[in-house]
Length: 78
Image (cartoon, rainbow, N blue to C red):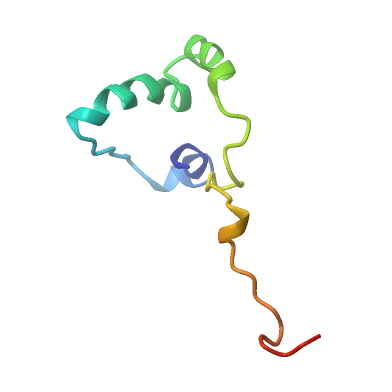
C-alpha cells in the first residue's frame, strides 16, 4: 500500500517512517527490499517474491465482501 501510494503521490512527501516493535523489526528488514529496493539488482532479485495481487491502483487491499454497495433508492424494491 505504501509503495503504490508513493508511486502516485510520492513527490508530495519528504519521508515515510515505519514505527515497528523489536518483534516486527526482523520481518520489516526482510520485506522492505521487496517493496523498496535500493538497487536494480535488488529489485530484480525481489520480483519473484512479490505477490501477484497487491490491491487496487492505490495499493489498497480489495475485499469484495467488505465493499460498500450504494443503490439509488435503498429499501425500495426494483
